[in-house]
Length: 264
Image (cartoon, rainbow, N blue to C red):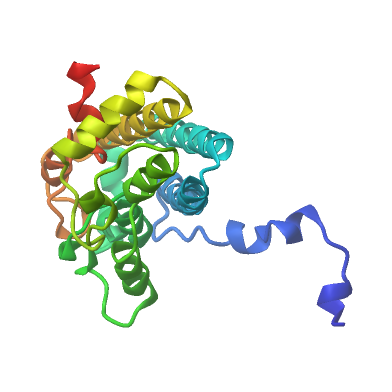
């Protein structure tokens, strides 16, 4: 056994605080750059946790474990609220304060977040444009490609509902999961039956709607934060900035669950 293995575990060593607290490396002397770095590093940690929770959620859905499904969805929803609340902190930075160090970011951009692209893929996005920023053979590219080749969270929900005795259409159960899902009238009829029975599967579906709404809330707050900070300027790294972000609004992740609202 090495000296490092025999050394007593401490709060600092368990959390790898030396590495974590050394990971903030501002490129300027501007006071506000530290906040910008910390906020975005925390975002990435939360994205990592959400991906961890969604993998567990899919396994519990496919195992038919309703209590664990509801508990995991509650945790993800709570994390999303925290992610949204972080924008309040970032918005304490004025446009002039951001512009004081913005040029030093060079080509770095939030659009390059491989974890967020992977999250979109887990939630069902199927778009080759998601991997354009990542060279073939790199770990981020492989992770995103793998997520787009696997069943999405909604696919797992359909399998859960089938396991609960609902007549999920066969074409939805057997579909090519590498293709995008845009909604299905027969699936919507099945979901109406789920809600009419008003049992635990209906509660699970409602938590999915909560999750979708929470994600849309984060997108909206993100857009408004970018608008108040840089207006309609090009985004960092030459991205489309607020214009692109606005285009992502009001596109539900689970369209079937929204399509049935007027019929409930």
